[in-house]
Figure 1 (tube, rainbow, N blue to C red):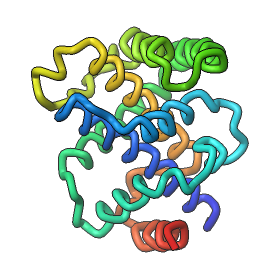
Figure 2: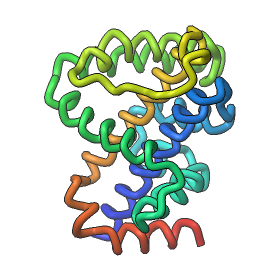
Figure 3: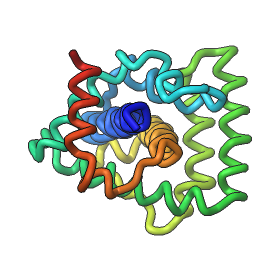
Length: 203
């Protein structure tokens, strides 16, 4: 059970960390390159054997872990971030029930991973490829995830592409959370266990 809780915590931290960049770029037009790289790399590691391996190193999720700890303590730094995360967790259920779409997304990610091996994970070509994949599949699910921000930046193609690629990353983490046994009931019955797992990771 402890391993499962730890895996769920890492996955939820991945969701929040990716979405924090969505919020940042939507408001300012700028993202943190290292954080984007961590998020997009997690999308491309489809064959990772453990939750930690999905992110390369759990230490890279410290920002997401702190955000999750704040939300579990009912002291979020950004309430809109929590609402966006809930929307992604709900979207994951609709996505996972659509086998054809999941297969199409898997094939698209495999193609993007091949490209990333040549030009780098955060190369604009890879970001655009992941963004187009998201737009052509997941964004068709209803209701769509709506990102609020500065209209000036949200009208820029590069910003939109990066946001879509990060939304795909957040969904990848949501799928991992579900596969680790996660459910919305965790936030009712497992808050203390999750908080303890977070504290152990941040120690």
